[in-house]
Image 1 (cartoon, each protein chain N blue to C red):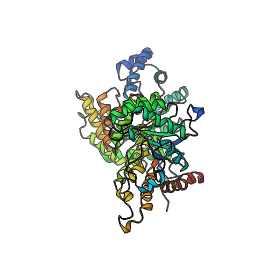
Image 2 (tube, each protein chain N blue to C red; image 1 turned 90 degrees about the vertical axis):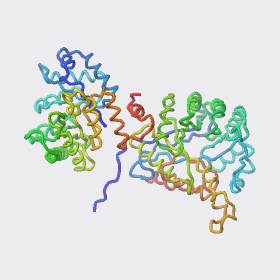
Image 3 (cartoon, helix red, strand yellow; image 1 turned 90 degrees about the horizontal axis):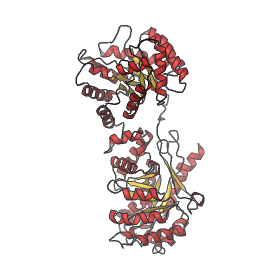
Image 4 (cartoon, chains in turn green, purple; image 1 turned 180 degrees about the horizontal axis):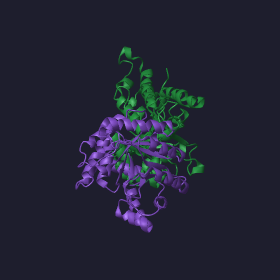
Length: 325
Length: 271
C-alpha cells in the first residue's frame, strides 16, 4: 500500500517577532526573545519548520496579589511586595521574559498613578535584563493615562505592550509605535474579531509585523477546547496566506489555570483530587502543553513545577526535534 | 480567486485605436484601473486590429510591462498565431509568467499548443470543446475537459498552471448552457487531486443584456460555489469585486472579519 503524501503546500507562514533590545539595538536587555516563524502545522516536522521554540514568560505584579493560593505564595510570597525582587526571582527560575502586570493601577485595586507605574517599570528594567511584556489594568480610561507614560519610560527596550481591543486600540498602538514597542491585539475567544482588531490596528499605521495575537485563554476544564480551535483556525489562515492572521500567539496560562477551583482548592477538597501542592501545577502544566500543540508561541506561566514540565516538553518536542531534522 | 483582466482587448474600440496608433497612454490608464480593482493577470487580445498581429501582441505586452510585471494571458483563438506570438513575447519578457488562452481538446490543437506551453514555461487555458464545437451538455464538456487535462499533465505542465474553461454562452441565446457549465466545473473538480484551475470568460453570459453587471456578478458567485478559481472579468466593476470577495468569505476561502472587503484589499496591497 502506498502511504499518501500528507504534506500541504502552504503559501503563508507565521511572522517572527523579536521582543527586547540589547545595548547594540538601543536597549539594555541581556538578550532578545524571538517567537513565531512556523511554516506548517505545529509539530508536524514534514509539514513545515518551527524555527523558534515557544518562549516562557513568568508573572510579576506591581502590587502584592491578594488571591494567589498557597502553592504560589510559597514561591513568591517573600518577594511580591517588591516588583524588582520579584523580577529577579523569575529570572532565577528560568523565565525567558518578565510578564509585568500593572494591576495596581486599577481604580479599585490600588489606583496607582502613571508615575508610580513608570517607577515600577524602571525598577524592573534595572533589576533584570530580560525582555518585558507589560499589561495595563484593563480599564480603558486608566490605561490611556498609564500606558503611554510606561511606553515612553521603556523607550528603546522593545517591550511587548498589551492589549489593544476592537473598542480601545488607538492610544496603545500610537504609544507602542512612538516608542518602538511591540503590540498585543486582543479579541476574547473570537477569531473574526481577532482579524478585525488587526485591521483596525493596521489602519492606524502600526505594522502588523510587530503584532502578537492574544485570543484570551481558557484553562483545562473551562473551555480550553474553544481557544485551542481558535489557535488551529488562526494557524491555518496564516498558512493559507492571510497576512492579517499571521501573527504569533501569546496565552495567559498561569492566570487562567490558577483561577480554576481544581488549582485553588487546598488538600481538604477531595481525597481523589490528590494534594494541592501537585494539583495546581499539574493543572497549569497540562493547560500549557495542550496549547503548545495548537501552536502557541508565548506562554505566561506562574508555578515552577509547571515551568519545569513545559520546558521539558518544549525541549523534547521542539528543540530536539528540530535538531534531529 | 485569480482575476484575469478582460479589458485590454481589441474588441474595445479604445484599445483597438490605441494599438493602431501605438498610443501607450490609453493602455496604461486602463491598466491602472484594472490593477486598482484587483487584477492578478492581464489578458491581452488584439481583437479585429489590422496589420501585423504578432507585432500588435508584442506592443501590447511591452506596453503593459512598462506599468506592471503581472502575468500575461495571451488570448487568441488562432493556434497558428499563438505559435508565433508566445515565443516572441517570451523572448521580449523572459521573466513574465504567461498563460496561453486558449486551446481546445481537439487533437490538432493540443498537438500544437501543449508543446508550445511546455517549451515556453506557460500555463494553459483548455476549452471544454473539440472539433465538433461547443458541447450542448455536461457530459461532453467533462469529457473534453478531462481529455485536455490528461494531455497537459502528461506533457509535464504543473496542475496549478492548467485552467479548464467550461465555455460560457450568452443567457439570451443559450439559456440551458449556464448550468451545464456550472455542473461541468463541479464534476471536473473531482477528476484529479489536486484539481486544476477553473476559469470562465464571465461577460459572455450577459452579452447584449441591459442588466449585464447584475448577471455577471450573480453568475460569478454561482460558478465560484461550484469550484471556479479564476475568471476573466472587468476588475473595474466594484460591485462585482465585492461579490467575489463576499463569495470567498462564504466559501471559507477567507476568514471573516467585519471589514472583510477591506481585509481582502489590504492583503493585495490595494488599501
